Length: 172
Image (tube, rainbow, N blue to C red; front, side, top):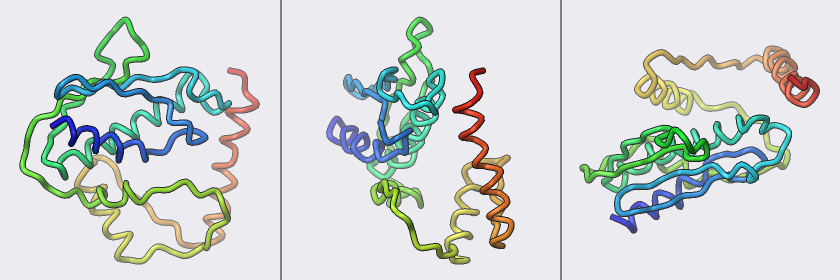
């Protein structure tokens, strides 16, 4: 089981994190994996009060939840298991299960950081359908809405770009 958990970790760390800093540390003991935050691991302005790191930890935990069943393991995730240790983000206990492939499992290993300009192509209907299905199956109260018109994308981009000003210019 240890080798499978190590493989899960190797894949899970493809999770996005602020400035790709990966502010986490794993401790594996038997079939239990503990996830810790490294407070100095992400010093970007976006990581105010460790919020960016917490989001990154959520992404790595989501990757674990998606990938583990592929290797025949079922993760049971307990958040903030140690009340007096704020850096102890999660404890994951693994049990054996029948292998099953999550539709997003393959994509996790293919993730890469690319800050270069990209070719602007629309998602295919098949791709949006798959994403809609995964979200509907995984999140009861969540829906995706697709914006295809360039003018609406530009307007949304301007609204979302205010994020940087709010985070970097607002001391509160």
